[in-house]
Length: 171
Image 1 (spheres, rainbow, N blue to C red):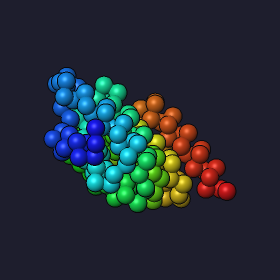
Image 2: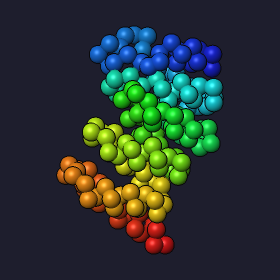
Image 3: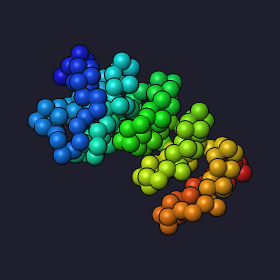
């Protein structure tokens, strides 16, 4: 695998097929991600952040997070800002997951919309990402959200994040 082959594969798989529709060619995504983890290239980054199809890519999507962590925040955050507004549910979900590794106040606005998503997975991923951003704005948002109707799991997550934010904002 080389850089050109990675770019070609990612270009042809935007997004990857749903897990149920994966074929032998799709198995190459794991090799692409491993290559880009060892050899990050900003040209591949936008394609990597939009490769997510329906499902979890048989565990490969989780490894994309590790690959993206090899890139600089100034390269990743603008792409996250764009992708968090995608109409594709799985792109939004996985980019929210990745956003937790890049705490940046610019992400507060799109994440604050996603924490009210009807999709509990997106809601939780967005909350976790917001919780990594230590800011009075996040504290205010979490306090307001805690007064909303929430599932038990989300309410517990919001409570934990509120405790963390209060502790860090007091310092």
